[in-house]
Length: 103
Image (cartoon, rainbow, N blue to C red):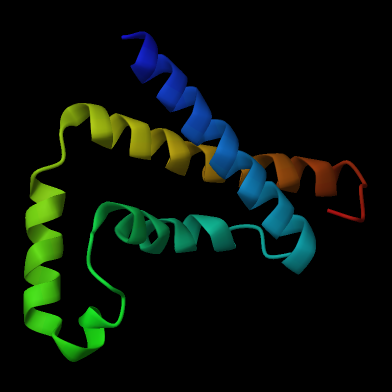
C-alpha cells in the first residue's frame, strides 16, 4: 500500500515537473498532455519503436495485449501521471493570467 501511494506521488510530481518545464520552454500549454499517451506506450511495451513501422501488425497486437494485461494499480499510477500533466497546464494558465510573462 505504501508503494502505491509513493508511486502515485512520484508519477504525479515527475510528469507535473516535465510538463511545467516543457510548457515554459515552448509555450504550448497542453503539449505534454498530448504526448503523454506516446510516452506511456514507450514505457509499457518492450518492443522497439522501429517495429511499429516494419512489423506493424505484430507490434500493435503485442501492444494491445500489454494494455489489456495492465492491472488496476498500474492504471491508477499511469492516471496519476496524466493528472500531473493536466494540473501543470492549469497552473501555467493561472500563472499567465496572473501576469507572469515567462510562463
